[in-house]
Image: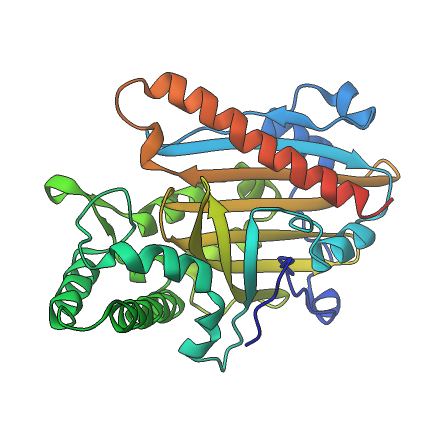
Length: 338
């Protein structure tokens, strides 16, 4: 696959979904949704402001936030903008990315050159830590390969480690696609501790108020994945090479989406991230509202960096940074339909 520069996170919403989706997608009215989410600044919302609402953080590693906006355009136009990649268009942190078709093989990930080059230099001496998100068996595999290559020149050693790295990513993709969150190998941490990403993503899905109140069908499909989804719900996979804290990192993304003429919802789940944070999941719903559309967006991120000493301050700072990223995405979405 050719590397896609200035990558747009296309959500690949098939047009046929508009025909397959049920007649009424949302479980509650937009006004009820605002009430259930705790959106207090409805006057600001009606003035066109992007307003915040609180999202409960289920553990000390979780950051969570929510934002909502009203847009004076029909849901169908917003859905089309999301399909064109409006949420990520212009994101300076995205280096490259691409779709992973169902018939693809490990070569699909060859575009992850930036993160491979960055990580391969240290994989030969990697240990359980929050510096890299690897399982204990993955760490042992990299160290064993490095010992086998100890007499090789630097170029050959890095090439072999990079190849093993792509193989590891592909195994993680296959395991997730076959077993869902139960197939995600936990990340090894010092002292025998682990980060169970699968359990966290399951918890984020269970607790998502946007999904629970507004889009229970997609919520159920996520919780039961990889069981066959109901009509109108589709899954796609993507890879992304993204700068996080100034370093490129590989991210494997699963998207589940549902769309129809009068609304839609998408969930984007980062089920593997190379470093800096553990996982991430967003839910964005679009509903018809007062001669326009209501967009509600909640986001969970798991990171070791906000746990431990000083966690209250760390959470406050991290939450504001997350909300700023979310607001920027909402502004790009709104600008795309002007």
